[in-house]
Image: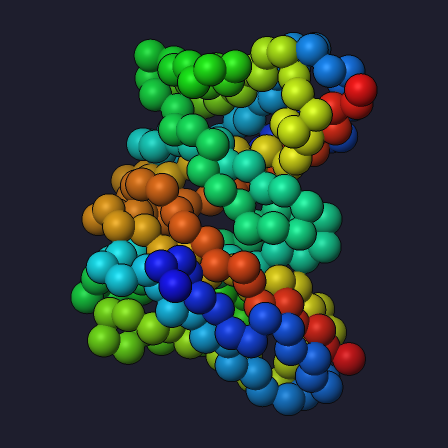
Length: 112
Length: 115
C-alpha cells in the first residue's frame, strides 16, 4: 500500500462547479498535512496547509480526519485557472518528522 | 536569484555514464529535499537533509544513487552507471523550518534523459 493515496483523475468539470479531492495516508503517527498545486511542466507550489479543525482559504477548504486517516480538498466556484494537478502531502511520523511524502496527484481540468 | 537553483536544467546521457545534479537552496534554509518525478507520475521521495543531522536516505532506489550536502548549503545528487529507468525530472526543494514542516520551495528541476 502506498503511504499517500489520492483519487485517480482526471476530474473534468465546468466553470463554477464544486469539486472535491480525497487523500488517504497510511502512517497514523503523521503530524502535518498539506495540499500542493503543480501546473503542467512546472514545479509544485504550496496551496494550503491542513489543520485538524479544518481550514478555509477563499474558495478552497481543507479537512482532516485523523481517525480515518483522510484528507480532503474542496474547491468551490471553479475557475479555468484552477486547472492543475493537486498533490496531497503528508509529513512526519514517529521517527521521520521532516520526511514529506507526496501522493501521485489528481488532475483537474476546468472547462468553459 | 532568491529561489532554489538547479543545474543542469536538461541532461542527456548514455546508459552506463555517471551524472551529477546540483541544487543551490534558498539562503538560510536548513532543510533540503530531493525528489524525482517520472512523466505523468507523482513525486518520489529520494533523500532529505536537515541541518547537521544524518540525512534520511530511505528513498534512494539503489546504491547507484548518492547525495551530499556541503557546508549545509549546496547539494549534489550523483547517479552512477545510469539506466534508462533513471530518466525523470529530479526536483530539489528547501525549507526554512526545522523538521521541514513548513513550505517547500522547489527548483525548476533537472530533466535527465538516459539513452
